[in-house]
Image 1: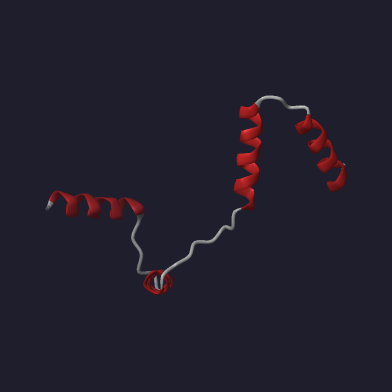
Image 2: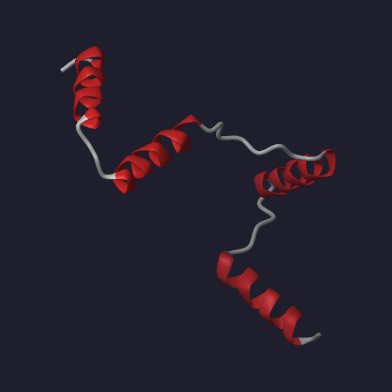
Length: 78
């Protein structure tokens, strides 16, 4: 089945659906797919990410579990 045939099949099948909840679910899927997949960053956020990327490339990283421990310790000190 090519793209055109698939679109026609989907249109035909959707046109027979009477369940409003199901139609809304399909709409949600279509709306999600249409959204752009990027986040608008401020200049400061972009700077922080570039800095973190450079540090990562230099091997200045820790594991997630180490980070979790540091955060727990930090929170318990407050």
